[in-house]
Image (cartoon, rainbow, N blue to C red):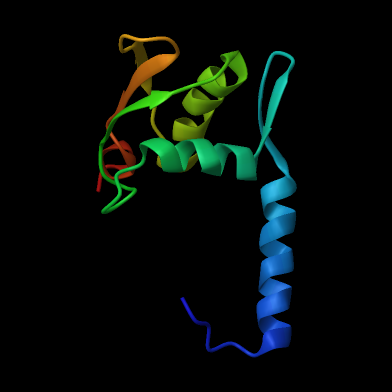
Length: 106
């Protein structure tokens, strides 16, 4: 995607986004996640056509940090609780959630 913004404005926007993604936005016990980490996890399960739609995806999660982080990511971005169940195979999980539209009553 090509931006029509002047280079200095684009640099400022990118710097602000990098700063936002570095902020810690979720904690669970001793585990913490930045906005950027949650965004990466959420993008793995979000509906490709519209992130606000219901979630139903099967993903590999490498460890407990990713597993708990996936739950936190759905809460943070979609505003609803995820159901995460084993899906056969090592570290494979099915993640489902009602999605943003349903969570906010849209």
